[in-house]
Image (cartoon, rainbow, N blue to C red; front, side):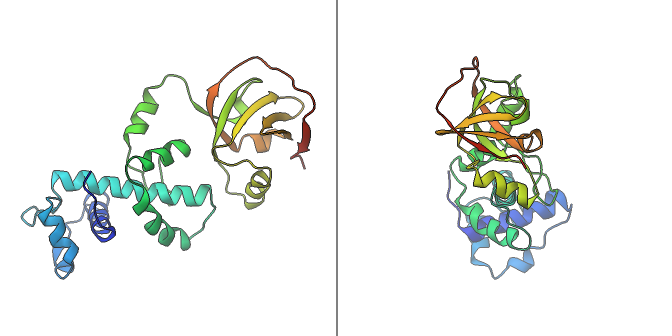
Length: 229
């Protein structure tokens, strides 16, 4: 895959937004003194003779740039809880590191989100297409699991700061393995060397990538921690 500079990616991204979302005819004049423009032309991403400037190759790469940026925004907003106006600036820096399949890993981690935090659509990736072809849902909320289900935490779906802090303080972070033990009277799950109990309102905020299912096997000697109010 041809490696582009940060500035080249930013130009492609801005052109894609103008062409695909704003339905505008981009003005190449504003970029006439930008060295990165000539590099994009030389690499075949931009053609001065085309009304919309982007070649087929450029359009595809520009879409990937937009996808990386909006996935970065989603990650920062949902997992790290970064708010505007910092989210855009931080995403601009973070997105340039999402190459060679990393953006698909982030997309899968977040459960293949459809929109960025500002409501703009996230261009679909190959991982999204494969995910849609799977008849069984792989990412579900903890509230939907049955005892014995095992998985890895995919993401936390909440905009409430206190709820997010409570879950993070319990060690509920993307990538951690989790196993549901009970559903009643509380949702009891095993994570690491500890068992935790939370109510259904908290359980529906935790999304898990299923790894396997199995019969409930009660283990003794575990430490108990409670996430209930």
